[in-house]
Image (cartoon, rainbow, N blue to C red; front, side, top):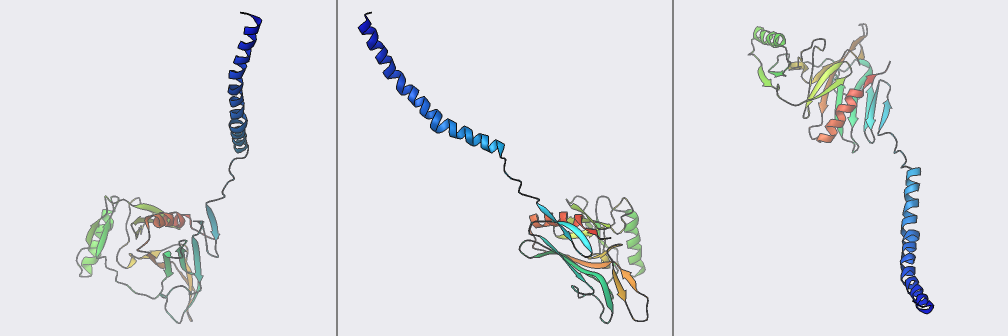
Length: 248
């Protein structure tokens, strides 16, 4: 090959190689390098923490944890309830509400005093770990009062969520709450009769002040759950109720 021919071969190779090299350089400069820098920046600066998903509610009487948008409202000294005898003074927690982000009262409990109720259990709510002794006692009580034995509502295979509400144990099926009237035992003795929709707390309690009588405390609260509450709201309610504690 002559020098002239070699010269033209070199020129041809350069003409072919330069566009390829230029394209590679352009890819590196305009695509790879910016993306690499972006990736390095993201690694060096991870997304900021969005903050806590719950907040602590500290009221005058109770403390609890609520998700963003949910609220707990306390009422005291006879307010918030229509289930107290008039002409009597009351102090302490007399109602409590749990509201969802749209302002609906998903759960409420109202202090009760002087409101009577039928003590006969027309229904007996039977869980898998129920107490046979408890059922027999209720049946005997009904018989002594001239009433038939309670109708057994079999919940032994029902799925429920468990809630520790202050000093009692609660089970929720849908929007209905059942509470254990004797938590000291390993069995679950579901409330019935007059106590079916009334909690009997050891704490919290409110104080009753009547003229001529010494002050007395009462832990009786009527409770309601929003019947149209969504499954998501009910699950959130379980968490909120289980977080509640009575302030010292």
